[in-house]
Length: 468
Image (cartoon, rainbow, N blue to C red; front, side, top):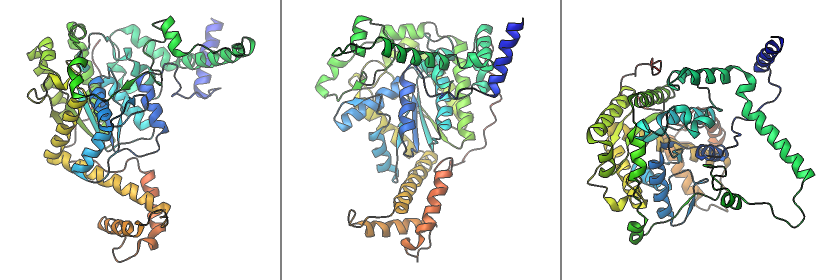
């Protein structure tokens, strides 16, 4: 009993005064979410649009960009949609920078934690575009929201206290979460493990160093010897997408019917309700943070819907649409069968480069046709343009390197006067200190632009979760 009391006492003491400060972004398993946030932390630019979704969004965005740029893309480093940036600027003017945090297998529970972690990393977009599909709500291969790779990584960054009611289906899972949440050594078990592993590696490198002239085994040699070596982890040079030619479309098509038989065969109501609960949590979070959440139903083939069942599919569309509207989020159903034939798919659910471009064109068109989202996108583009121009002006202009600077300054002066940041009659250079103050204010703000409240305030999310 004394040992147990001492153990609990040490845990309580360390909970208030930690002997070591661990970095929650350190994680031994470098999966898709880890690479996304690793890139995000290194990126000092402001992004006004964040993209979320499963592999359907990943494929559409990256395959399209590979063709648009006409070069292979390393997906551990490419986390934007340059094609979408240009389409948004062409349609809504201003400046757009997207950041793509979609990930294979991402479910609404993962999307919710992704946005919480995005905010914790001091990145706050004006707009979130979230592409969803039926699999995201009913995947038979996932029992709990805690089974996913994003959950294991992102729950290190942000607290899950407020959504614990939707995480577990059994009392043992909740008990494990409670222990991990409240006992210091349980909560930081992985951190201590990584610390010990680093110390052991340093020791082994000293006492059993690689012989002179010998080369240590590479990642590729290890996976050849052990096919499941660090299964699922993404090596920095292991995931590329390449440009696609029209004549190669048919040869590259894959039939994934069997995979989706497994994903759909044990869909149950509890999983669906749980993920709808987290879609509501995401809506509430975006409403609270004044971020415009836009929910998009992704294109999937008629063959895939036939596997699921037409009635089940329509029930899913109506449920997601209703949930989005309940939390003040615009909803666009972009699954138009007449637009997407087999030549636009890589398999029965993932769009290829040509399908990705068509999807993004349809998305921008839908955003432009809806008065609310059109105004939202115009504001987001304008605010980021203003932010970038103010920063450029605050740094000063080198007339030797930029001979068009005077013309550019005159144009900028007109825009600043239009937005009432300076007086129209004054010269820009006389307001350099004032502009610097404006830039500092923009940097200190939680976001660049402002969400347009064109609907009634959504009811607070008072759901307690899904009954076990």
